[in-house]
Image (tube, rainbow, N blue to C red; front, side, top):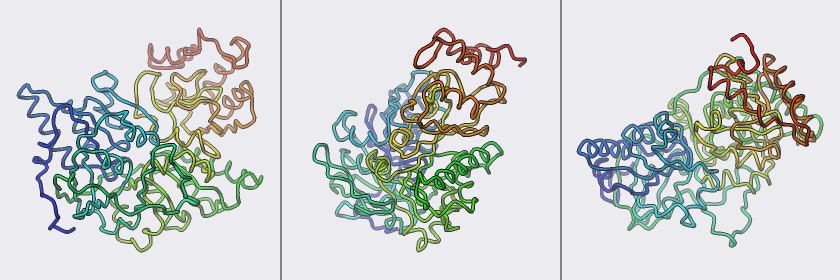
Length: 500
C-alpha cells in the first residue's frame, strides 16, 4: 500500500467526528467481506461517549447487505442506528428492529442502487468504504466486495476511505465496476456469460469529495462454516440427484447451467455435494456471494469461474486466494449488486438458484425472513431477485427445527416472501418436491409426502381434507394452528395432541 496517499490521513476517531447525529451514512460491505471496520468502531465509541453525556447520536445506515460485527453489531450495541437497509444479520440489531427501536427497510438487493439514484432514500451525507488504493484523480480500488459501494460513492456528499493493507493489491484484477443509467436510457447489459467483463476495475469519484483516508491492516474476519451435517448432506444429495435427472432428460444442457447459491451452512453443504459427485460436470456460477466451498471447488477444477459481489471467505481461505492470484484472478469477477442480482441477466443466463428459507407451506409459498410472521430474522437479501427470475428456483430447509418442535412445512406461511408462482422446487432432508406443472392440491400432496417430517404428515393431510373447497383449499380459522401452538406451548405438535 502506498503510504503517501494524496489525501489527508485521519485517525478513525477524526473520521468519525465528521459524521453527525441524524446523518445518512453509506458503508461498504456485502457480508463481512469488504466491510468498513475502523471508522464504524470509532463511531460506536463516539456514540457511547455522547450518550453518556446525555447527547443524542443516531445515524441512518445503508450497506450492500449484512456486515461484520465491527459495523452493525458495534453500532447497535450503542443504540446508534435509527434506520437500516437493506439487510442485516446482527443479533443486537435484530432485537432492536423487532422491538421497534430501529426502523428497518427490507428490500430486494437489486432494487437498492436505483432507489438511491432516484433519491427515494434521501441524501447520502457520508460514504465510508474499504479499499486497497485511491488515486489523486479519484479512482477508488475496492477490496473484497463491491455491493452498493459504487452507488453510495456516486451520491455521497463526502467520502472517507479505509485503506486496508491486509488485502491483496491485485484485487483490482477481479473487479468489474459499472453503474447502470436511469431508465428509460438503458441499453441491454452485455453480460453474455458469467465471466463477461463490461466495466472498469475501479470506482471513479470527484476527488474533491474525498475528505481523508484511514489506514487499517486487518482481515474481514469471516467465520469458518461448520462441516456439513447429516441433514445438510441429505439435502445436497437430493438436489444433485434432481439436477442429474434434469440433465439426462434433456431439460438443461449437459454442461449444466450457471448456479447461484445463498449464504450459510446448508448452501455450503449443497456445494460440497455438487463437487463430490463425479457425474456433475464442471460448472460456472452467477451468484451474489462466494464462500469457502466455492474456492475449494475451484481448486479442484470443478467450478471453472464465478461472478459475484463478494468473497465472504474465512481468513485462511482468503489467504489462499491472495497467495494464488495468478490462478484465482481470472476465475472470479466482482461486480456491483445491481449486476449480480439483475433480473434480466439472471433470466437470460438461465441461472439455477438454490436458496435457504425458514418455512414453506403446502401450496408452495415460502417465508425466508420472519419467524412466526412477526420477528425479523435477517431480511430477504438477494433471494427474491433469483427466485422470481431463475430458470429453476430451488428452495431448501430442514424439515424441522428445535428438535422437532417446529415444522418448516406448514399449512400457510406466516409471512410470504416467495409465492407459489415463482417457486419450482422445494427440498428438505426428507426429499425433493418438483412442483412444475402441478395444481394446488397436487402440490400439497407432493410437498407433504416429499418434504414434511413424518411426524407432521398426518396433520397436514388432514388439514387439506378438512379445508374449504376452492382452487386453493384453506381453513382460515385453523391455517395458523401450528404457529399458535408454538407461541403458546413452545411446540407445534401440541396443535394435534402429540405427546411432547
